[in-house]
Length: 271
Image 1: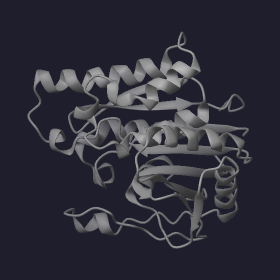
Image 2: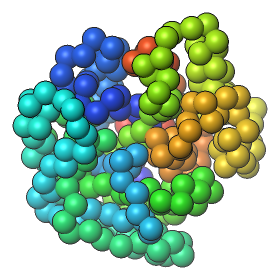
Image 3: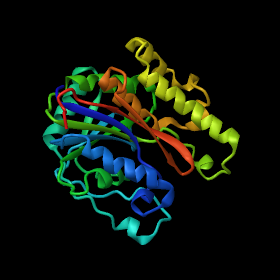
Image 4: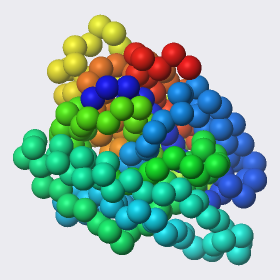
């Protein structure tokens, strides 16, 4: 694969980043600015924490609809639109790259954009003029298989592609709304520091980094930060694709918790 930028982002709580929620202000600022640091991509491949399948599944509709996969928000949250077109040719290429690696993969011509896609993309590329496809997680949540999906995508031939892993480096719903105590902050920060060290340590070999990501539950307070790991696994696909330490790490506070973004830049992207 050539000319690919890769970013794992924390996408926030439901539509809240688009509803002027003050606890998402840092995230909104970061995502809005992040897009300007990339050369405008010809297409976006997005892995959302909010789509799981029994096999890797890729959206293949030319005109995806909206999926409002949240509840209890103001009416405006159900009127949001992100009319970016799909990219069926890219979807087929992604499927073929996975099949060539022995990974079962199928196309879905009906599924639209869930909020893991349209919320961050509205902030990053509000013109909605870049074709977008989504790739599902596997519902077995196996970290090794998600690393392997990323590695398989290294064979994908598509110039000037942006790959986004849209999840959350901290995702414990109960704890988002719990009192902000020193103990809770320490647990949150310990796991975040482990992620930053694992993905940025230049002294680690890639086999060591791979093994740490595969055994992420051994990290400090891993299950406190992720009782269920669907919001972390887009990061595994991003790292599996990059195959090297991240170029940049950024921390922002969201809903009183520290969360992180990791970026791998194309060597040809000089923007």
